[in-house]
Image (cartoon, rainbow, N blue to C red; front, side, top):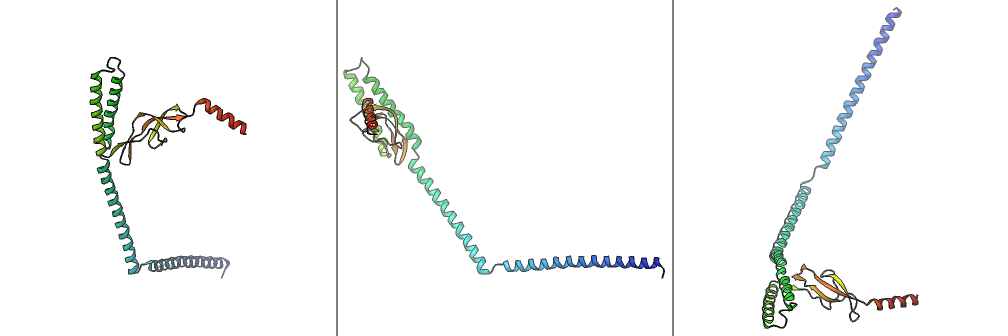
Length: 216
């Protein structure tokens, strides 16, 4: 056998070996894939729920659904109740302007020099008071009542301070003047009272500051 044939046989042998190696590698890959599939299949089998577990999940979902339905029902009932209780809220708030206009009209007439101390003025004021009291009575029947202000401590939830008035007879922050009456509709604020609150006189405040400085 000459050299060329030997080389040829060697090359053929290497080619066969390469093919065999490639086939083995391919078989290994396929085997691994098959093993992975089997493993995944076994895992899925393990994850399959028993009828008792499925029933428990269904019961949980059903309970959640009923709870959500109950929450929606309660929200609806609350909205319906609010609509019934406060349905006239906007109308009541607008109607307060009538009371304000009556008060303004009364104030203008009382301060009119031509009408002062006349019988005509007295009769007009009487009629305005009757109308005012009737409106307040109607409001009260509909659970709308004025907010107490005079001599009360300022409550930011009910009162709005518009000015300060020097008054040593009251504790600072006490309401001493009512500029515009506020109203509540049951537990809901229709509008706050516009008020003036007391404060200490400037001289007294300076004296207290001086005392504080001396004490320090």
